[in-house]
Amino acid sequence: MSDCIFCKIVNGELPCSKVYENEHVLAFLDLSQVTKGHTLVIPKIHKENIFEITPEIARNFYEAVPAIANAIKEEFNPIGLNTLNNNGEFAGQSVFHFHLHLIPRYGKGDGFG
Ligand code: 5GP
Ligand code: ZN
Image (tube, rainbow, N blue to C red; front, side):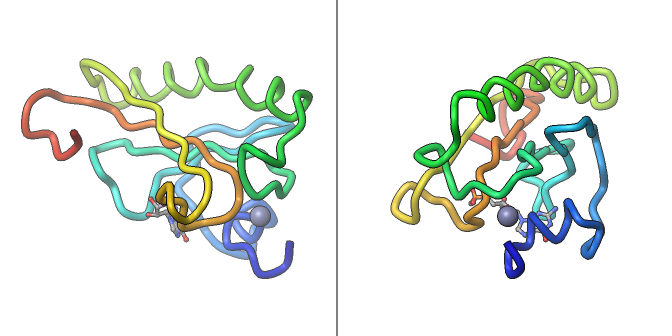
């Protein structure tokens, strides 16, 4: 989708700090880090939210998530990690290209929760 910022990141039209990439997904640091290492995982194909992704897209997407979580664990050494997925404006979605937040946790006062 031409006016989608995440599609522009996939196409290389906008820069990102890449955490992980394979054929189906791209993971990169969130511009606004809730905690250190806050990462977004997106499917390379444009789908607005969970109501639009097919089971095949979901399979390819979630298959990559443990490797990405482990890459974050290696790099940032958190003591835990939250996953978060907002769908629809009312639910807090602000970029309408499906994405999963991976939010590393470091203990009380780490900025999340
Ligand atoms: P949402 O609120 O839709 O669940 O999350 C969208 C996230 O995208 C926000 O956490 C926001 O900081 C992040 N974001 C928005 N624009 C950009 C961008 O251009 N680059 C990166 N890396 N993150 C972005
Ligand atoms: Zn998109």
